[in-house]
Image (cartoon, rainbow, N blue to C red; front, side, top):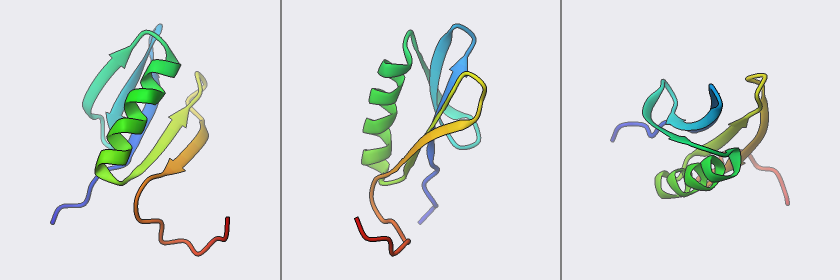
Length: 74
């Protein structure tokens, strides 16, 4: 079974994009809030991680949906 790619919310000019790792399956949205909502749905469906980037490109938030191999309580 092929590995599912994590989902990223990234700046796209004046808009925000949701894309799988490697830049595939790109959709754009007017607001970051809309992009995060769409990215969350995609990440939950694929049971992968959602990484939200700021305008500077740095990761500012990450959420795991599905199998989390880390053994961290809470």
